[in-house]
Amino acid sequence: MKMTRFEPFRIADFLNHDLGRAGTATGWQPATDIIEYNDAFLVRLDLPGVESSAIEISSDKGILSISGERPAFENSEEATLTRNERASGRFDRRFSLPEMADVDAIRAQSRNGILEVRIPKLAEVQARKITVEAA
Image 1 (cartoon, one colour):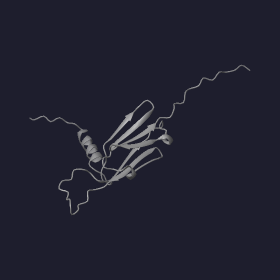
Image 2: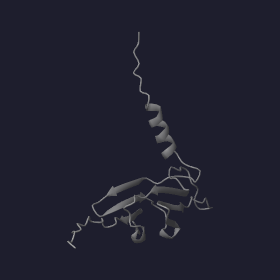
Image 3: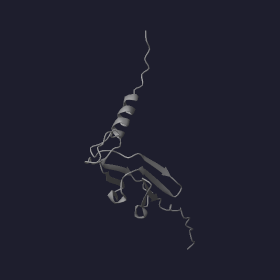
């Protein structure tokens, strides 16, 4: 009798991977890294070929939204696309912001095809000891 290992979450992992990376109703999703520092979060997106003017970033109700568009190659009389492996069209990414995020100080910079969104953390409120005075 052949033994088969039962892995109940394997299909869920496959579906999450497939649904999260295979493309969306908006077109494609750029690869993203999120790095946490002591004083900030850094969200890095791979956006080669996307002009900074084509990127929209907003923060509303604890959600950071990043969207934009990479133009598709247009065939012309001089050039015809013979192979297409790069995604094009609209993209849209959304991230939940932690309560400690300082949304008023979020900054973004695009350099060499990488968008970096820096989200500073709020200064922690320090516990304060209150002395009781005798009346």
